[in-house]
Structures are given as structure tokens and as C-alpha cells.
Amino acid sequence: MKIEILGTGCPKCNKLFVTTEDAVKQLGIAAEVTKVTNIADFAKYGVMFTPALVVDGKLKFAGKVPGLEELKKVLST
Image (cartoon, rainbow, N blue to C red):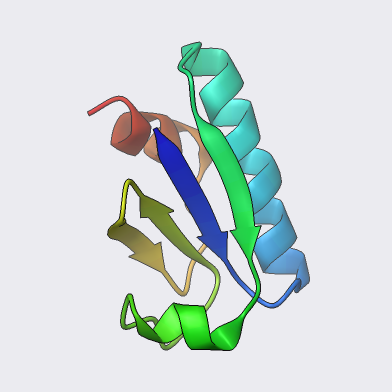
């Protein structure tokens, strides 16, 4: 699984990155979690507000930081 956190490095973006890593560890899934900070890359997903979460090329969240349980639900489906 490839997980991308889209954001410019703001506190919310960093929070989403950390929470996503926690969710991956708790679920015990194999995933590559990366930060994407290039604004031009945001456009290919149609992201207007950050942070955003992209899982295997599909936009799951934008403009908010979901909680741990909500992230685990999204990542386990």
C-alpha cells in the first residue's frame, strides 16, 4: 500500500503524517507512508486544501485531520 500525505509542512500536515504512521503500525499492514510537499503534485489529485491523504492513488481526505480510528477504518478497507 502506498500512502501519501499532501501538505506544505504545517502542524496539521505533520499531525496527519504521525497519526497515519500510528494507524499503519496498529493495523500491522505493509505500507509506505510519504510526505508530498510539492504544490504542483497536489493539483493532480484536485486538492485545494491541505492536509490531504491519498491511498494507492485515491484521495481519501482533504482539508482535515481525521482521527486515529477513522484512519484505521479507511486503511483497512
